[in-house]
Image (cartoon, rainbow, N blue to C red; front, side):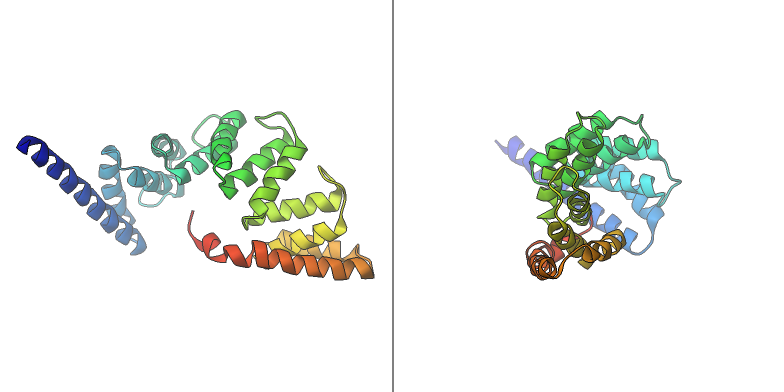
Length: 238
């Protein structure tokens, strides 16, 4: 019994020490001491600290504290992804999509994004929608792409809002609708998307007087429901 209690205490102590070291490494990053942070993250990552693995992958990817190395970034993202780190899973999928540090594999990217999209992750829904729209790594299905973009757009995802607006404007995957196009592009533009802003101005020119009133009302509703409601969430680093 005492042996078990001592073992449990030592494990707790080790966990607390890891947490303290991780916090110190994060503070070092914030202070610009990337080499110090890199060294701490490296030690913790080898001890299967999933947060450190994800952080180390980021440092290799961005070239912080060490020379940029996509292969090592992918290696550590894979380690963290296999342990369930969502950010690592998203970034690993992106690396497969762009062939960074790994052989380009859209099907592998789709597999990771699919798992996360099913859990409601808007970034993965938006990315997976792009694959379905283009038919890369999955069987092309623009209806599925629209559905995924809509789910992501309704969670405040800027890319999804912009693309959904463009699809309504062009009538691709959905029935052409200038009112919906304007409203979604307005929402994305409200979040600072320059492409959406330019496209919104074009969509505005397509509206009749009656449609304009309807579009402005709908745009205001979309901003309240799908921009303002998610402002704090979308400010969080990913």
